[in-house]
Structure formats: structure tokens, C-alpha cells
Image (cartoon, rainbow, N blue to C red; front, side):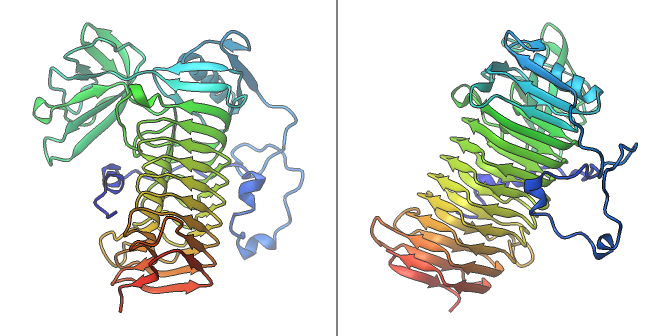
Amino acid sequence: MSDSSPAVDRRHFLGTASASAALTGAMTAARAADAPAPPAVAAARTPVTNPRSTSGDLRHGPKWDESFTLTVGNDRGDLNGTDQRVLQAAVDSVARMGGGTVKLLPGTWRLRNAVYLCSNLRLVGSGPETVLMKEASVTSKLSADSDWYDQEVTLADAKGFKVGDGICLRAKNPHHGGATVIKRTLVARSGNRFKLDKGLRENLWASGTPTVSTLFPLLSGEFVTNVTIENLALDGNKANNEELDGNYAGCVFMQDCADVAVRKVIARDYRGDGISWQICHDVLVEGCESRNHTGLGLHPGSGSQRPVVRNNTIVGCHIGLFFCWGVKYGLAEKNTIEDTKTAGISVGHRDTDNLIRNNTVKRSGQAGILFRPERGAGFTGDRNTVEGNTVLDTGGDEAAAVDVQGTTANLVFRNNTLKETRGPAKRVGFRLGKDTKDVTLDGNTVEGFAAKVDDRRK
């Protein structure tokens, strides 16, 4: 697997966004345990005890016995319905109150658009019997040019499209030939002409063969903080949908957010990623299942700082856990990753100072743990520690359980167990590329391979 793989290339389509979102209230106990020590000056301050609710103070406040809560069911609860509109109405009500809980009862909601999350929200289901399922996608070409300042598009075939649908507009950019990807909502129509919720801000001309598809994340958050999603199932309906890569969507997609916790969520069968977060800080993904996506199981995306990914199960995805671009000071521990098409865990572009420990990676298609080559020195995933992991039965006859490529430097592999039960063939435990350096191998157990270490630096 190289830096030219589809899962790696799609990072380049992610537009540069300005990180925002002031950090909000205290993190959960689970996240707080992994937070860095506060500055020394903080230790000299008088501890905050019994705080009052003070306007504008997002760091300290009372723990109230009761907060605003709405229950949502298919045919019972405070709000009733079977699609995204009732879920969005509940979230919007919580937003107007400044925060609270949306409690989803057992039932199934079929989504024609994303549910857009707000700050200070707990979205809590009733377990696997709470299911949010994406409706089948439809696609049409555009039959008229739209300019960057327009707020409408004209479809060649509007069959299957409805006002309120979430859509993805895609085209070849007429100026530089790259990909243009725009997510919008259809808010009004006359025949085949649809008004959008926001202006295009890109040119969609016939020369770029533009299309529109009803593709969107199931749950989406942009520029929000202090969000918890837990105890529900998300079904991407892969068999009836087209692909939308994880820089734009997934069962859960977060962009420019902070203090997000995703717990006990089942994300399955999305034609793209399971759970993806881009430029999001202090994200916790814990106790989740991410299964059978065509993209990435878990995708800590560009610029995300201090992610904690623990006790998750990832099965049957293209890549299991993908550190994207500039993911730093993260912790990935006690995850089980099985039957990925390529890599179980993939680390690359300036993904530095992360700790990957006590994970189990089984039957990866190409590499159990991969450090990508990227563009050269200064771009690789340096200064990472990989310890206590088990990697079993990796790839084809010439595969490496751990493959370190490019100029990747300053890695520590400690007390890992690499096993091959299918016969040695030409398989190796560790493969160290010729330009790698300062790689420490300490106390690892390597069994069943043709060679324990293929060190190409010599």
C-alpha cells in the first residue's frame, strides 16, 4: 500500500478550514483521565469548588440534577415521527434552550438528510433497537450551468428528489481540473429547478460534468462543541447508495468541532467512512462498532488534536483506523480491528506523538500496522510509540505485519506480538524501508514468519 492509494489521496480534497470553537465545559471523566496536565500556574490557584453558572464561562459550572430533555419515538414520546425531520426538530429545540438531551426511543428513522447537531447536546438512543437508516440515493446530471454566486441548480432528471433532501454536488473544477464537492440541502423547487439552502461558492459548468446525488452523513456537526452521541445504531444502507468519501461524510461526520464523545454507537454499511472527524479536538470514540464500510472504520482527520480511540471493534472496512493528516497526541488502545481490505492501522502525513497500544489487528489485507511514505522527510508520521499490540495473519505471501515506509523516523515498537499461522511463505514481521531511521524494536515477539525483521536500511 502506498501514498497513492484512494484512501490516502482523498485527504487532498479536504479544503483548508479555519479551526474554531472555543473549548467548552469539563470533559467527561474518561477523557479527563487522558488529558495533559494543566500548566503549573493552575496548580497555584485556588481550586474551583461549588461554581455558579456564570455567563460566558464554558469551563466551570454546576452539575445540575436535571436538564432540558426531549424524548423522540416513532409513535410515542414528546415528539413523534419516522424521518430526520422529527429528529432535527428535537435537536433544534435543544439548541434554543442552550443545550440538553434528545432521548431516542426504540424505533427506526429513515433519513433523507443529515441530522445536524448543536453544541451542548446529548443524543442518546435506547441501544441497537434505535436505528437511523439512510434512504437510497439517487443521482442526476445538471442540465444548466450554475455560477459560484448562484443558489440554485437545474437537474436533468428530478425523479426521486424532494424538497428537504440533503445532496452532494460533484464536478471537475473548470479552472484547475481538481474535484469540486459541495454539500447542500434542497429548500424549494419549480419543476427541475431547485433552490439551495446556501450559495454554491463554486462554478458548476457543463464542461465539468456536474452531478447531484442525495448523499450526506447520517449525523453531522460543524463548528459545535460539547457533543455526546451514544447508544444507537446507524445504517448507511450501502447496497442502495453511491460512494461519498470520508472527508465529507460517514455515518458520523464532524468538522471543526471540539469536545465530542461517541460511545456505544454501531455504525454499519456506509458507502464511505464509519466515523470521521476533521479538524476536531479532544474527540473520544469508545466502545463503538464500525462495520463493513467501503471507506475507513474510524478516521481521525486532518489537524485533529488529542483523539482518544479505545475499546472499539472495526470489521470489514477498507482501512480500520486511519490517522489522516497532522493528527497529534492521540491515544488508540484496546481496539479490535479485523478483515480490513488494506491496512488495519495506518499512520502518515505529520501524524506525530501518538500512542498506539494494546490493540488486536487480525487478517489485514495488506499490512497490519502501516506507516505511509508520504512526500519525504518532515511529512511522515514520526515520534510515535507502538506497544503491546497483537498483529495476526497479515496480507499475502510477501506481506509485512508492520510496514514502515518512506523517511519515517523516531518510532518505538515495544512488547508487540506478531504472529503468522498460515505458513511463513515470504512474509516478515517488521519491514523497515531503506530511508527510515531511528526505529527502536524492543521486546517484541515475532513468530511464524520467513524473517522476523526485513531491514532494508543496511
